[in-house]
Image 1: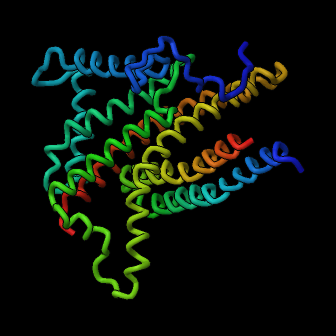
Image 2: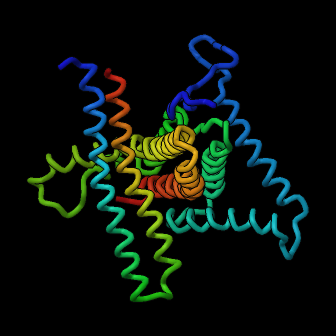
Amino acid sequence: MDAAAMVPIGMGLAAAGMAGAALGIGMIFSKMIEAVARQPEAEPTLAKYAWIGFALVETIALYALVIAFIIMGQG
Amino acid sequence: MDMSGPIQHFKVIVYQDIHLGMLDISISNSVVFIWIAVALVIISLRLMTLRPELIPRTGQLMAEILYGFVARQTRLNIHNEGEKFIPLMFTLFTFILACNLVGLIPGAFTPTSQLAVTGTLAVGIFLFATGLRFYRHGLGFFRAFVPAGIPKILLPLMIPIELISYLARPVTLALRLFANMTAGHMALGVLAVLGLAAPWFIQWLPLGFTIVQIALEIIIAFIQAYIFVVLSCVYIDDALVDH
């Protein structure tokens, strides 16, 4: 297999890193819904932290994109 | 119809090539849109607070909410000396926010989608925090890398880890903002290209999703500016406290 053909494969494998972030985001919002169901009056505070956590976890998925870019530059 | 793909609009186009010795101060579309963002911030904040009243109207209220928000976060995160850093943090927040939002105008360029821009901001904050720590603690600077309350035997393992995590700060700070802005616009581009290439009876689906994506992008623009400022506050606070 030549190097040029391996580049898209590597970029696709980098996309697998999103699985972890999907797990994290799912966990954040499931806990968020659970917490709001238990204590509806705490929703504004919880929503703030949930969105910040969402952004931080989403960023982890985007590091996969950066790695994909680095691989793309190798080709 | 521009079908050149989702990466095309991140291309930096140099309008005017200017070199001062080794220094490259060429005027590109990135520079132009940074100017636009800065002008937007200055003009809108000036207009909002042009005639300050005791009972604020809509514009003044918006400016005061924005300022109050950043000031509260700064005081919360820099424990003893937050007041001093409010101007810096307010400037940082409004600059990043304006850069993020100006890119959402169709056809515009996002300055924060360039690693050079976010990297400069992050390295600036990092150097400032490091300098501040040297200024405050002198050679006590290095005590920060020795975590308290762990057995002596673990020190050869812990010190390199602490050192690496300290040096990784500007990298993660820059990459976070850059990757969020790039990926958001890329996803938007992919959706738009998909929508335009689809047959007419299904076009509403991807094009409808672009609206949702833009809404998410506006939220992300705010959250990323907020996270950048909060992390800068944490790093500066880390430099100020005694270890």
